[in-house]
Image (cartoon, one colour):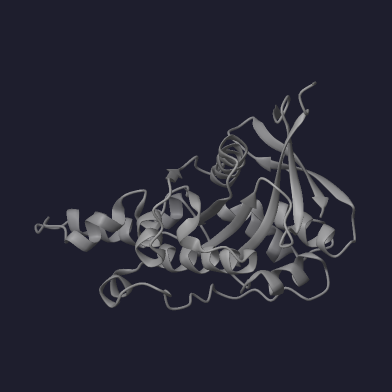
Amino acid sequence: MSEVPYLEVWVEGVGVIGPGLTGWEQARAVLAGEAPYEAAPTALPAPELLPPAERRRASRIVKATLAAGLEACRQSGREPATLANVFAASGGDGHNCHQICELLATGDRQISPTRFHNSVHNAASGYWSIATGATPPAQVLGAYDASFGAGLLEAMTQVAAGDEPVLLVAGDSEYPEPLHAKRPIQDTGALALVLSPVRTPASLAALRLPRRGALAEGASTALSAQLPEPLRQLAQTMPPMRGLVLFEALALVQRAQAAHENIAIEYLPPQVLRLEVLAA
């Protein structure tokens, strides 16, 4: 039997939070051209499910990733505690990084335990495990502006290799000045997907990754020109929002405005991640 020329996974749940984006239903309507995009600072909800002590310590990126991840899980109908997960970020908690640098620049260099444990790259993943009670394997990675693409590639590979569903969450938060001048991330935001190896009643679309040529040199796909410039800029200036091109394709195939979409997501330069999005 010849090998199937592509790796296929099914999208069961989607989560979105970012500037002017308050969940998948609202974001889907915007990306499909059915509703206007209104630029606004990210509205971060209170961190659900966390015990009171952890809730007080939760940073902006923790609130964003928890909100997006829970939305994707609820849409899929799967229990968060049962899902292996992949978390991706280019830098993580920018405010915590700023505050640690600010403290180190003074005479008092004793960093609080809260500041320290929020500084590690897997902080958001750790808070997710605390909030949901998840014990399956968790992977945490960073690839600068390619972090969403790298996380998606890792999650799809895990789904195919383990034949089990996987949650992907990509998130980042902004840096205050003066770091903001060197790394001008606009705001805090996160995207999430629940990916399954098989089609289920919850499936929204299929993602196909060619086994040969998935990583190739080229330009990443931009959001459609008819979408407003502030939204297209958002997809260029915030690392997790580089995944919005995939979410736009999901919005179009979900609404049957297209049977399939071929896209290229930013990966480590000069490569892009090429995949096809098909209607369920």
